[in-house]
Amino acid sequence: QSVLTQPPSVSGAPGQRVTISCTGSSSNIGTGYDVHWYQQLPGTAPKLLIYGNTNRPSGVPDRFSGSKSGTSASLAITGLQAEDEADYYCQSYDSSLSGLVFGGGTKLTVL
Amino acid sequence: QLRLQESGSGLVKPSQTLSLTCAVSGGSINTDNYSWSWIRQPPGKGLEWIGCIYHSGSTYYNPSLKSRVTMSVDRSRNQFSLKLSSVTAADTAVYYCARGFPDSARWPYFDYWGQGTLVTGSS
Image (cartoon, rainbow over all chains, first blue to last red; front, top):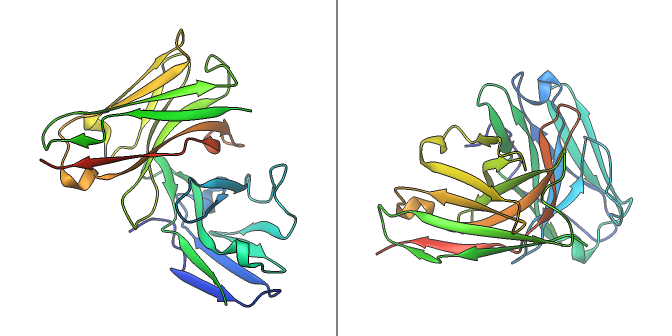
């Protein structure tokens, strides 16, 4: 059970917009620690998607965006494509646990 | 382009020690700011950070694993290593090495990952 809670699954049709939430607490996101997001395609290593809450690394399409408010963060994907079908993980630091933590992951299905 | 490659024992008997090495190419491990982490993923489950090391040798470990983890860095070979003692079946996972870049609070996020290596804890 992770201290960062993500929905186990989300789905959407091609072209639609989906959001994935990452809910934390006062010992992690609520303290102001950054949230980062990763995409893991089946059978591959995770790939950095968003860093520092809102920033996209070079090469990541602007269809992906991140936001943060209070004790939660969100990843939004617009113009959903079949190739977006993957697992998505949020990551932050937790001061109570004194370590880096990942959310439990969310499986995105493109209908 | 930075590349990380894990290597080591794929099968570890219970109570023995898991040993993995991550070879870094296309860049130096001996660079300020960057950290070097191990992250694992049990089959069908989520990601778990194991710990990180800096080129200076400073380490930070996941408190839940700290008593069993040792990380080291070999600057001459541009690689870093993980040892996890007293292995059980619960340590069966794909183990990834990754480069950490500091965020605004100086804690790392991971911008480069190795392909991962499956380690099975079983007799």
